Image (cartoon, rainbow, N blue to C red; front, side, top):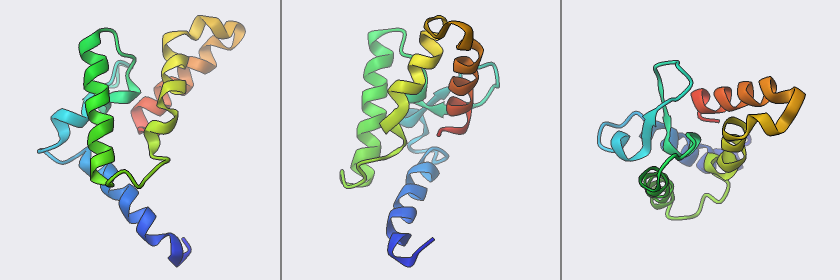
Length: 111
């Protein structure tokens, strides 16, 4: 990595480290719905209730607070797209399995 990017890389690493921080884990993560038994950032799960949607908003806001709002393209940037792959996989017709595979990969790896 070019030295000019070190602070951005460090800030992004802190966001991922927070997923493993006992103080923030309840706010930031939930169990995956892929059957892996793991956990993921809340915004990588499809919200099925208003409470889950509010919890996702809280998790995104927590990450924003951690970077003081200066990290504009954190991983939650594409989470909405990734969630549609899992929630609306039938829409992709013959590519349904690909959509589900990408959704699972994004959720389990917190891409």
